[in-house]
Image (cartoon, rainbow, N blue to C red; front, side):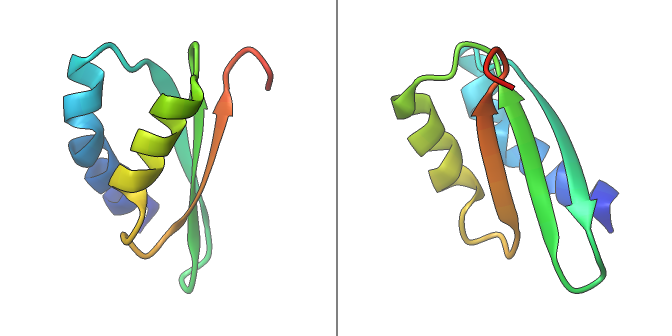
Length: 70
């Protein structure tokens, strides 16, 4: 299930990657709940909001952090 969630998130993030978004992503969870974790290079508050907008409503939780702060 986590592979499916990650693949779906990757597809939805494709336009942002085209704008230069660079990140590391992995998914954790159980059959009832999953969390998408992202470590984003040079994360700005604007980009974090855009990522959250893309991923919200997908039935998963998400955690987005600056790669340098993690």
